[in-house]
Length: 251
Image (cartoon, rainbow, N blue to C red):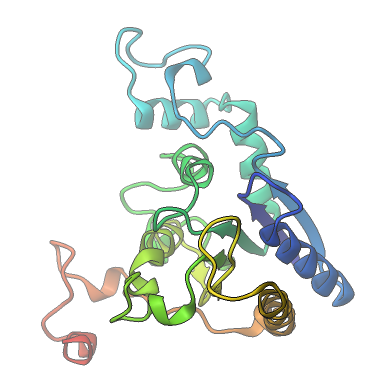
């Protein structure tokens, strides 16, 4: 299996970087091929803007991001950094996104990666979405760290339900066809700010989080994805059919 690890943390020696090292070691031991995509180290520009395109396919006085993405994809003239990222995704069977939860979402550099890399016309169209998405057959998983402990992210916790915070990324990955696996969340990864435990307890906790990730990686390729509805489940307005068993199960 070919595994792409997309790292979105500005410090390679951070705990997030340590989880990348755990993944590399475990996956290589199992015989998998690994590529690490360190967005900060590569100085990936997360801001989609007109200057990324040498010429405008439509209007020189008005920037249409989606139209330019589609036209430049069709002409094979996308920005070189986007072409590089697309080639990495094409190579991979499994993509691991490693990042800290900042302000209840992924870091801006990773959000911008989605904005620029998953190009309209090339990686999604009006019909090439969801269970008909471009990347169907490939798997993706989020490996996320948080500062607050796990109980704070339960449905009635002060930080809110973690399922809700990760939904936008899960939905985006499924939107382009990935089989999305359940996330690996390492809670209570305290940095230089708020502390919930003393140094010794924290070090033990960090070691346990690394061990849990290492253990899960062994069987990651055989895990079943998160279930999503697809085109056959929706009516013309994109609403779950009245006759769908899922409507009654979810209702």
